[in-house]
Each structure stands twice: as structure tokens, then as C-alpha cells.
Length: 285
Image (tube, rainbow, N blue to C red):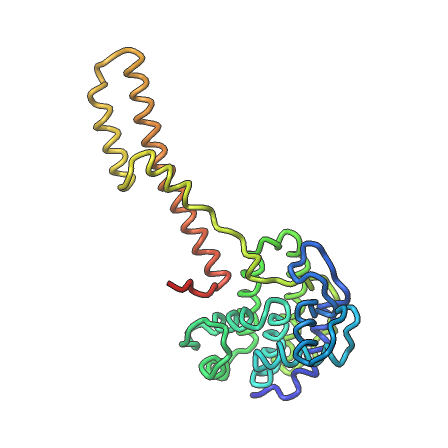
């Protein structure tokens, strides 16, 4: 079912969540008004062959045009069911259309057979059409968005506002999907831009590799322990400070290697968790 009146219904809700003038030093969007950043406004004015001006002077017609063409149409909101279109639209405004479409693609699960590429194409639209439970789909989209937000460095500063915002978005989206009116939106914060460029950095693997190399070179933990045992054997009957020093160095080397293996495994798990939350584009070879 297409969403022919969705934009006119969704825009006022998104504008409430975006609030008014913002210029928080930690907001990656920078100087913003009604959810439109100065950078986006400059680009829009340039394409329209208009002189540059402060985004604080943006008028309502410009706001509506930017939201429609840069966000609503980018996610093909008119082709999405009532409620789903609003949820994806709100995510696009806050984190960009590509990221919001990725959340939808992941939320579709096995119904979606394409790549998680952030492109709203036929495969994605067909998968949405094949979905029987729009309430559940919306809940999964919000879950993906929540995981993404928590993987950003800016979460400690803006997380509470983002959480309150997406809770309202989920409630409204599910109400619309079921044919209900839903509650009126209220500004609860969470209007700061949430960009993948602000993703948390994974633990560095270099330190782990260095510790492993210093301890035992290549090989598994079992090999490290075996090497330590073999190296200690000749000194079992010896005495003196030399023996103690050698034993200490061998044990320290083994512990360094084991610690390196453990930290590398931790870093690998952390990287996998971040990749799952962020759905980054593959790095070109």
C-alpha cells in the first residue's frame, strides 16, 4: 500500500523533533535551524541560484522543499506503507537517507535478498510489500537505529535525547501503520545529527600484535605454553640469580603472548559488534 499523503502528515512530526535553532559545539551538524544544517542550506541555495545566507533565516517553503527532495523522496516515502515511511523519513533526516534505508533493509530480515547498500530499489520495496506485520517491521527498524546511535562517540552527550525521540517515532509509526492517529509529538531532544563519521573507534590491534610478537612470535596459546615449558626445563636444577632472571623472562614472554592473543580476540569481537551496528560500506581494495 503506497503512502500518498505521508509527507504532509510526517513533516510536522519531524519538525517538532528537530526543534529550532541549534549550534551545539559537539553537534556534528554544526549551525542548524529546523533540522537543516548550514552546509545543506548552502548547497540548496547554490542549486537554486540564490545568494548564500545564514540558515537561521531559512523560510518555511525552503524547509519543506529541502525535506521533501533531500529526504522524503530519497527514501521513496510515497512508495512505503503508512507509518513505515514516516519512520524511515525521520531516520533519514537525523542520520542521512542511506543509513536509514540500511536500517530498513536489515530489519526486513530474510525477506530482503539484496545487499545492505542503503539504496531504496525494487528489491527493498518488494520486501516491504511482502511484510505482513508492519508493527514488527517498525520495531526492528528502531532497534537497528538504536544500535547505530549507541555505536557513536556522541552517544554519551546526546544519547538520552535520541532515545526519547526514537521511542516517540516508533509509537507514532506503529499507530499510523495500524490506522490509528497516534499521540501528538513533543520535543524531547535528540535533534543533533547522528552521523556514521562519528562512529566509535575499535580497539587497536597493533598493541596486541606487538605483545604477541614480543612474547612468542607466531602460533597459538598452546604453542606458547609448550615453548615456555620446554625453555624452563634446562634451568630446573640450576641456581642463582641468572636462573631466576631467565625463568622470569620466559614466563613474562609467555604471558605477553597470551595477553596479546586475548586482546586481539577482544578487539576482533568489538570490531564485529561495531560493524553490525554501523553497517559501514565495504572498503575498496
